[in-house]
Picture 1: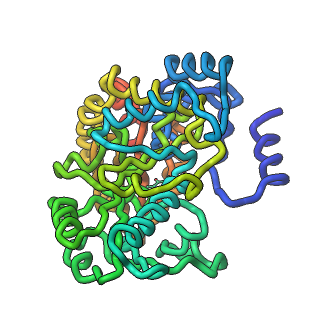
Picture 2: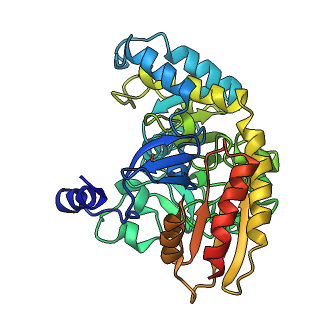
Length: 399
Ligand SMILES: *Cc1c(COP(=O)(O)O)cnc(C)c1O
């Protein structure tokens, strides 16, 4: 079978809910992936930041194999000898008090919505059915009905209603808008520290600090969705650290397993998770021993191998290189750590065709909207590899 045959199978038998680049990958190691013809590419997407630790990290792989040979799933009807250790290690790493483990990122978002609503009724005394959560324009929090219901992207929403009520949408990066939107039934504010899917949109300096202060003053819960920005991607363990704040609830996923398995979690610094009672929430696979063993090693690799520090240094170096690219069609080059983006003027468009040409040159990345390219390689990337990437990016983006 050649690339075309694999692509044809996907076209014929699969739902067409994605428009991938026409590259069929079969193997990965560190920052590199190989297609079925043996051609090598540098991965500058990292599965939307799920493989921060690099493809097929040997230590995570070993932990997965070892645990898979012992015990994979008990359900939460029984306890297992990995869960408690996973809780403690994740809490110690992130300075949290409590953890609720799930699988996909969207499930962590759904979980936090349930937990915060319950807190509103039980702790804040809001009338049943009235709790309100504030979210931001151009957010991305996942794909379930409730979540796309408060998306402002027409493609994500249209044709999927009716939606879950109880959400109010305000502009991103505008602390005053938050203050004005808070009412007597507001329970929480859900926001990404940097909007990844919207095109690596970085809010004004001081935004999160103000948001923290406003949430505290009005007794509403600050929920940071760090599923993409967390676990080292922006050069800090959590992006909230750039502004020296702590959210009440933090969502992590993606790199929590280093790309081996879907593992997500709600981290809590407040009383919110403590309010949940048996039977009120759950997941058959959430907190299973295989997931816990993988995640324990995935977070250990982040710190043991200094990947967070490396993301900060390589991110600055990569950003500087991108900023040196001269093309009048480029509107802005921006980023934090290894979450970087090049934005073209909207009328120039063409981000997809740049990505296709970069693929020909051995570098994989993906457009977000028609005019933005995100560069987010695994955090194991070294200086030599950043140079290698820039040598390929520059001629393409200048053409
Ligand atoms: C990817 C992502 C999600 C959803 O995660 P899934 O595992 O795809 O459900 C939620 N929030 C943010 C910020 C993300 O980047």
